[in-house]
Amino acid sequence: MRNEDIRDLQYTLHTHGLSSLASSESHIHRQLQSILQLLDMDYLPTEWDPCTYDFGMREIAQKSKILFGEKKDAVIPHIMVTFDSSFAKNYILIKELLQNGMNVARINCAHDDEEIWLMMIHNLERACEHTGLKCKIYMDLAGPKIRTSLLRKGNKKGKVKIKEGELVWLADEAKGFDDDDIVISPNEKGIIPMLKKGERVYIDDGMIKGVIETVKKGAVALRIIRISSAKSLIKAEKGINFPDSEISIAPLTDFDKECLPFISKHADVVGYSFVRNPSDLANLQDALKNLSTQPPHIVLKIETPESVRNLPDLLIQGMQQEAFGVMIARGDLAVEIGFERMGEIQDEILWICEAAHVPVVWATQVLETLNKTGVATRSEITDAAHAGMAECVMINKGDHTVKVIAALHDILHRIGGHHIKKRFTFRPLSIAERFINERSETNDVQ
Picture 1 (spheres, rainbow, N blue to C red):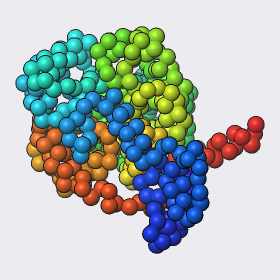
Picture 2 (tube, helix red, strand yellow):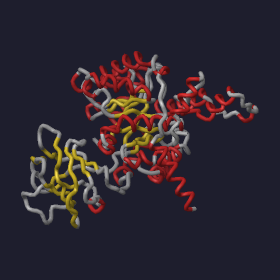
Picture 3 (cartoon, helix red, strand yellow):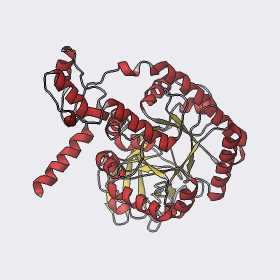
Picture 4 (cartoon, rainbow, N blue to C red):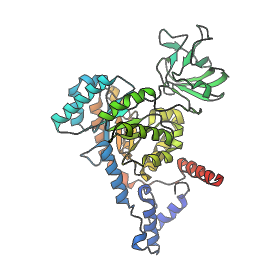
């Protein structure tokens, strides 16, 4: 249905006092049947689609419970809190977070090691035992580390000054460059040959933008065209994004595979970074099945244009399991697709996932200024209200996490009574259009 523009139909239905099909993603066929019945079409009892509104809501609620556990407040999504190294020795904070509404503890395997992770988990288990509260453990696979490494100028200090219009190089090794050349390695072998002239490159969460100007064997020249940071520096260990490039590297790295036995033993849910297509998901599903008869459930992190484009196929692959989830990883995704498209795409993902009865995690920068400084910005409050459309909200690490949870409860309680009144008009979803068109082309070829 979302491959079509039905806005005129919605208007006509609404003016006749019928359902305008808004918010019907989870039960669309049954909703159409109900409208047609009102227009004098008769259905036999066996012809009614059993997927009603109540059925769809129960499916999402049940799968959310499997992934994120119990929650006391129906209005508030599940709350996921990111742990950092300090949590290994901060039992009091973990206990306080539990008592204030944390449902899921997130451990990022890109940081620390198994010893630290185990200390975090033991503190959490102790806090759960003492409070009588339950909390799921979510562990993020690190995935490929596409981050800056300075090979020549700035190598010793870990940073180098740049200016707009300057030429810098991307290469896997320093050989062939002078000491005064700015040479950056993306820290993942095989990326450089995949890059083409004219493609954009973003560094440090999009703060630095460049365009590939020259392609040579083993290196590409990048013209810096925008620096949004007050300090015009490229630092080591900052993220690099290639939104226009076809980067085909395995999302399940050797380090991830080494982590899987620990994750299978201790985690309830595993987050899959940089997943792009169904075969990526199938590889992780198989790896987990080989490690455990009851492997952790999977949450797909949608953070690349490919994962957005392939979302319907990813959902179909994931739906082979009892429950799985989708995370809108807005940090990398915003850089990859463009900040101006973020509002549109995050809503498309929410709608498509609701059609599949798949719970969604709303992640990255939720009340981030409040978490870091103790005071929220006005736009953060609006964003936090929008987060109530998801089944789970992820909070990053910060010094004011307890205050963030309290603010979320307050904001979402205030907005919760208004969601049912909000109507959406349905223009075609680009995700649906691409999916239908690609399938049609495949069928024509066959």
